[in-house]
Image (cartoon, rainbow, N blue to C red; front, side, top):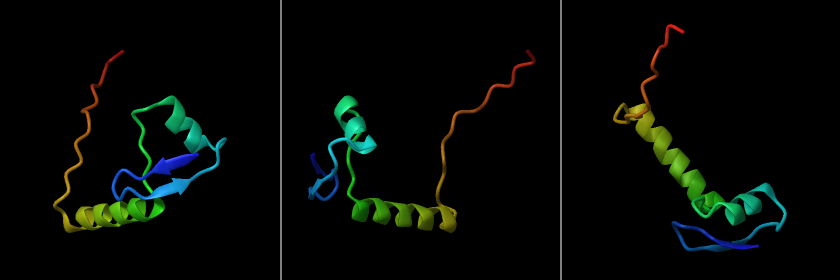
Length: 66
């Protein structure tokens, strides 16, 4: 299966029956990111977390008494 990276527009080939290919075929909201871009995004995110300027917005958990 031919896929295109959303960040750098590089075209890669992945196995037709891999879990990633199935995810991309069945759910159009999922996008493909090449390993180079994915690594770069991971590095930059880890740097921002380490700097203290990174806020992670998560839903507040409601505590039920039940």
